[in-house]
Amino acid sequence: MRYRGFVSALALILVFLTAPTTLTAQSTAPPDSLAVMEAYQQTLRSVARDVLPVVVEIEVVQRVTRSTRSMPSPLEFFFGRPDQNRESEPQQREFEQRGLGSGILVRRDEETVYVLTNDHVVGNADQINVTLTDGRKFQASRVGSDPNTDLALLKFETGEEIPLARLGDSSTIEVGDFVMAVGNPLGFESTVTSGIISAIGRQGPSRQGMPLLTDFIQTDAAINRGNSGGALVNLRGEVIGINTWIASQTGGSIGLGFAIPVNSARRTIDQFIETGSVQYGWLGVNMADPPTSPSNSLRESSGGAFVYSVYRGSPADEAGIQPGDIITGVGPRQVRNGNELLQAVTNLQPGDRTRFEIRRGGMQRSVYVRTGVRPASGDEVTAGDLWPGMSVVEMTDEVRSNLDLTGRAGNLIVGQVVQDSPAAVAGLRSGDIILRANNSEVQNLRDFYRELNNGGSGDVVFRIRRNDANLIIGLVR
Image 1: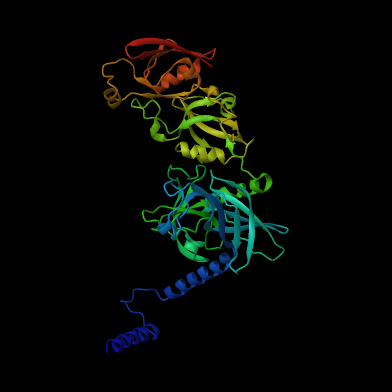
Image 2 (image 1 turned 45 degrees about the horizontal axis):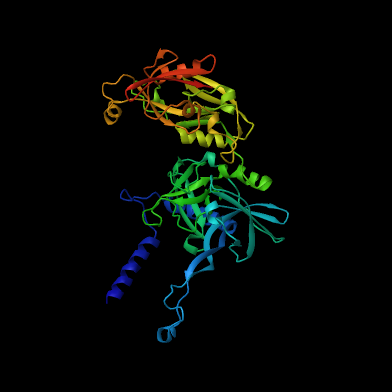
């Protein structure tokens, strides 16, 4: 009886939905709402048909060696072994470790097909297999990979017809735009989810394994493990992002997915193909967010990236950027913090001449910098070239209380001192109180950096207070 009641109710609903109706004042939906939704549905269908063939499944196999102990034979329980009193020695055994991810077919050069994915998908794989949506399988090899952007490029050879993705322009996207995420979450190949762009320009968390040299598109389209390397596309079927990571306390999607903007990947693809690696622009400064300044001498409320030190002979040094400058813009891009400066500079082509907006002594000015090539390792730049190689902060009442400096003269205290830098070689230490610079009193950070940069000969002399002693320490640039 309950089943019959359910069927009757369902029949009434169907009759209501399919019967012609006359709109009255009580109607809540406009007459064309169904047509609008059907048009949207047709758009999603069309995008899915276009994008699914260009997103592939990537299977990686890595051979790892582990130490294991041999399992005793059941007969040993009854008969024992000659060496039964000696613990078994560990043995080295080789295992195959497998992983799954996604990739995007982005380019073809004759019979070579290129696949874009995440660096963390490929890892240290010994074998890489690419499977298309139609079931075709190819063995791929690595062209190049870069953990700083979490991007990798693979290639395989074929004379067969292969579909290619259309890459969009991620600089034109806005919050609220409809998007679809395509990939192979948890091994469920060719999965499509939809949502909107929730935010742009997001910074990743500061933890090991997170890419440092990119910002992210945030979306609520469902992304799970296995989606990494897949496509985030707009309603035109254009790839605007490469799905990369999720924020989740459970390990599953909670509507916080993040993708690398495709514009960040374009130059990376070209460089991988040309050289197998990525080159970044280099400025040559040691920077962070502007320090807290109780005297407001830096006007830090307007944001920017604060330059603590400059590498001698670097592009920044040659352009006239000085310690104490606050960089507020790179070309047309506004810089609000240290991370944004890092990303803006690394996105510049080495050799480009770019206008930098800086604030110095409360005044805004422009300098032009010809960026260099970011060193691949610390061997190419040394701490000995970092001028001055220390940070200085204005003391607050809380700092004075914590360090038991209440009643002591001086408003500036040395923070971090970089090992082997000129400041370290001269003998400056973290916790030193700076009283004077070049025989002038320094009450705030503006005073300090004015004297640091005004030394005509390049030498700077500091009078400092350390414990209960006054010291004179000179720095030679």
